[in-house]
Image (tube, rainbow, N blue to C red; front, side, top):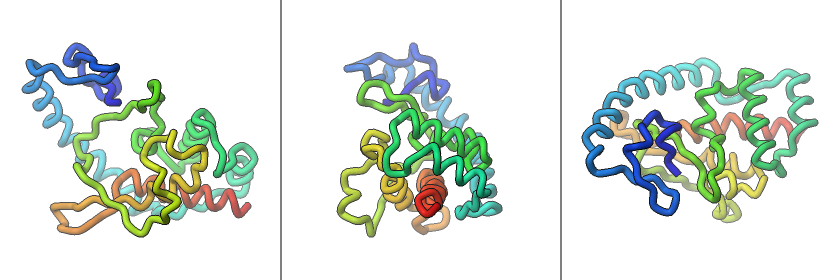
Length: 192
């Protein structure tokens, strides 16, 4: 579910149908202007993200103490929603992820059966994944689809790509890059 409050959009711009916000027609121009204004800031933030990833890489080597802590507190194949959120918080505390990454790893609060999603002006309109084992077909970006098996869920979500019209090539989405990092940590935990 899109939450106007989480994305900085005034709630009065929306009416609600079955608890789902729908933009009121009279705010269409203001919404478009706000999205355009946010686009350049989002581009700068994304470039900073890509620079960070290029500098740090996606293979993270945790200290023995951090790995032991994570392994003793979390089961990569059986986490509740609260445990997953605490796990992501710990990855932020350890410097593996940044607070801004939470928006891209299904960290948001549940609202009934919907999950709140930040509106991302740079989000691709379509993504693809290939070479996914059939047993992953039950997964989607919602935490609830994981069934608590964060390792397999992260493995699935790390495969998504979008077509970059600037480079004319398929590239991993920001979420896929972050889930790839998370998958690496979860694999280290299972091997510990």
